[in-house]
Image (cartoon, rainbow, N blue to C red):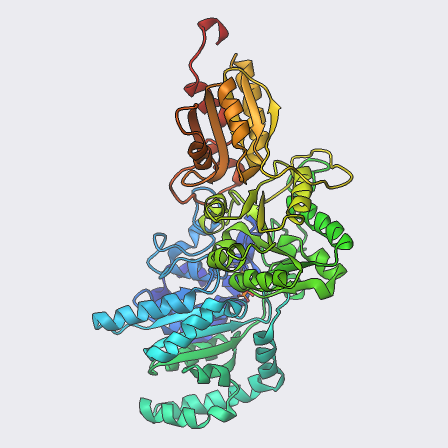
Amino acid sequence: MELLRTINSPADLKKLPPEKLPQVASELRAFILETVSKIGGHLGSSLGAAEITIALHYAFDTPKDKLVWDTGHQSYGHKILTGRRERMANIRQLGGISGFLKRHESEYDAFGAGHASTAISAALGIAVARDLKGEHNKVVAIVSDGCMTGGESYEGLQNAGQVQTDLIVVLNDNQMFISNRVGALGAFLSKLLTLGAVRNAEHSIKTFLARFQFWGGSILRVAKRAKVLLFPGMLFEEMGFSYFGPVDGHDVEQLAQVFKHVKELKGPILVHCVTKKGKGYAQAEADPYTWHGPGKFDVATGKFLKSPTQKDPPPSYTAVFSKALLREAENDPRIVGITAAMPEGTGLDAFRDRFPRRYFDVGLAEEHSVTFAAGLACEGFKPVVAVYSSFMQRAYDQVEHDVCLQNLPVVLCLDRGGLVGEDGPTHHGVFDYSFLRMIPGMTVMAPADENELQHMLHTALRLDGPASLRYPRGNGVGVAMDPEPKSLPIGKGVRLKDGSDVTILAIGNRVHPALEASQILEDQGISCGVVNMRFVKPLDVALLKECAARTPRLVTVEDNVLQGGFGSAVLEALTHGHAEVLRLGIPDLFVEHGAPHLLYESLGLSGPKIAESVAAWVPRKSPARI
Ligand SMILES: Cc1ncc(C[n+]2csc(CCOP(=O)(O)OP(=O)(O)O)c2C)c(N)n1
C-alpha cells in the first residue's frame, strides 16, 4: 500500500505522474478486498470501477467538480481516495460510514444514493443549478449498465439532451447486474462490443484526442455529429448526447486522458467504458453474482468464513416464499412471476428455472414491473411481483393507479420488510404498511413466521383484488411448517395468549418478540395478552374492540414507521375512548445502518425492550406483584 498510504485526498492523487496510476489501481483493489473480506459488503462493483474512480478524481477537480454515483454500491474506491481510508474498517457497521453515498458523510459525496437510476437526473439538476448561479464546475454522473435499465435514467437522459447544458455521463458497462444482465439495452451494448468496437474505438479515440487540441469546441461538435452514423452510440447521440467509446475501462492512463479531454467539451457527453465486474480478483471475475455482496472470506483462498450460527438454522423467508410460490404455480398455470433484476434476492430464481415461460425479469424497473403485472392481470393471469419493500416505493403510483384503481388481482411480495441492517436507510423496508394501507381495495398482510408466509401467499392468490405481503430479511423463527398451505380468513387476527392487564397487538415479524416480551412481563407480575393481527388492512376491528373490553390498555408493535402505520390504523379504529393505546414502532426518523438485532434493540423493538416499554406504561397493581 505504498502509494495508497500517501493519498488522503484527490489532491494527493493528482501529485502522481500518470504512469503511477496502475499501481494505485492495484493497491486500491487490494485495500477493498482486505476491507470486505473482514466485514462483508459490496465487492465486485467497486473492484470493477477502480480505474474509472481513479481517473475521474485524477482528471476532475473534486469536490468542486461533482461526481454523482448511481446507487453507490460501487463507491468504495471513491471513499478510499477521498479521505475515508481509515474509516473503511467499519463501513456499514453501526456508527461507521455508510456502504452507499451520503452528503453529510463527505463533501465528495455530491448526491446521496442507494436506490438505482437517479444519477443522471440528480447530476442534471446540479448542472443546471451551476448554470443558474453562473458557476463553471463540471458535473459527472457515473451509471452502470444495470442502472441504465431503470426508467428514470432515460427521463434524465432525454431531459439533458433537451437542456444541452454541460454534463458528462460515464456509462460503466460491466455486462452484469447483480445477476446476469437482461433486456434489450444489454443486447444493444453487447452488439457494440462484439463488433470489435472497443479495439476500433481505441484507435479512433487516440486520433480524436490527438486532433482535439487543434479544434475549437464547436467545430468539434460538428465533426463529431457528421460521424454519428458511423459511431456505435447512435442511441445516445439521438438523445442529444455526444457519445465516446467504447473505452477500455481498465486502462487507467487512457481513461484519465479521455476524461481530461471530454471535460473541455460543451453539452451533454456520454463516455461508454467497458469494465469487468470483480476485476482483479479471479473468484469475483468468474462468479460475479456470488461476489456482488459477499460475507466475510479469506482473500487467499476465496473461501467464505462461516460465522458461528445455529446448527440447523430455519430456512430464510425468501427460501420459504420461493418454495411456496413454486407449489402454487404447479397447481395454477395462470400464476406468473415478476422480478426487477433480483431473481436470487427475491427467491424467484427457482420459479425461473421451473417455469421459464411464466417468469419475467424486467431489469431495474420496479414501476414497469407493477404496470406490466396489471396488464397481465387484465387478461386473466395472476401476477406475483416479488420486489424488496424499499424498492416498491418506486412503483407507488403504479400500485395505486394501475393496480388498485382497477381492482386487479396482483400480488405484491415484499421481501426485506422492516430493518434490513447494514444497507441502512435507503434499504430499510419501513414504510409499506403506511403507503399501502391508505389505498382503497388493497389487502395488506404480514406473516408472523415462515409458516404463515406460505398461508398468506396462498390466501393472496385467491383474492379477487390486489394484495401485499411483507416479510423480513433473514431466517424464519423456526416454527413447524404445515404440510399444505391454507386460506386464512381475510381481515382476521388471532389471539395467541390471554392476559388481564395489557394486550400487545403485534403484526409481522414483531409478533414473536411480542410473545417474548409478554413472557418477561408475566415474570414481573404483569398479565399480558398477545394478538397476532395478521392484517394491517382490512383491520380486525371486532377483535380490537374485544381486546379493549378485556384490557383497557393496548400496545401496538410494528417495524414500520409510526406515522400512518399499523398502530395508526388501530387508533383510527378505536374511536370514542375504547382504550388507551401505546404505539411502538419506527420513530419519525431515518434509521441508520447496522446489524438488525442492534437496530431493533436501539429502537426499543426487541422482545426485552418491548417489555421494558410496556412495564413502564402499565400501572402496577400492588408492590407485591413487582
Ligand atoms: C431501485 C433499485 N432497485 C434495485 C436495486 C438493487 N440493486 C442494487 S445494485 C443492482 C444491480 C446494478 O447493476 P449495475 O447498475 O449494472 O451495477 P453493477 O453492480 O453491475 O456495477 C441492483 C439490482 C436498487 N439498488 N435500487
